[in-house]
Image (tube, rainbow, N blue to C red; front, top):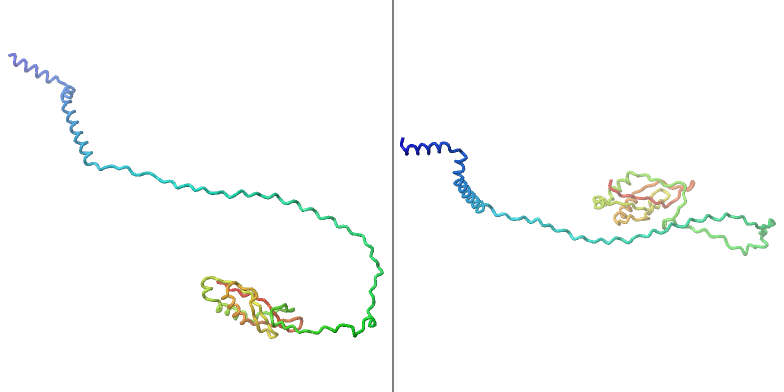
Length: 230
């Protein structure tokens, strides 16, 4: 066997005896620089094509605080003093003369010629204005259904639709036959249209005659007329 063959055989044996770790160490440089080149290109591409990032405005504004003036302190007054008890009444002693007489009245001391004339009877016209009228039996309404219908007709539509109502106190002068001779506003509702409507309704009323004992008498009476939306 020649020397050349021997050297080739030794190289083959050394190559076959080389481990995987030795092979990795021998190829490390190529892998390292190759990885660095690839990483450089990847980072360059990211910086080139990645969108520009901006910071969002997260600032906030605070409302200005307003100072509130507190009301002055209220001084609570002291409690009132206790009411003193009334004094115990005392019966006073007095001397009363039991011998007290009234002088007799005679025509000699008081002649007829000197006496004042008797009072003349004056007739008061109670129909002129509302006044107190004595009675023992009050007049009663005879036509309630007609009065209700008159109130429904007389209620001003503009007020009824708006839900505006009110009460009118009306004076009625009722004669001996129970007819309404006169009517007047005793207490207004505060609305002129309702007052006028109440007077129109008042003329529809019919009553039974009022009595003073066993006599039929004319009287003034007050009756409220109320307009309201049901």
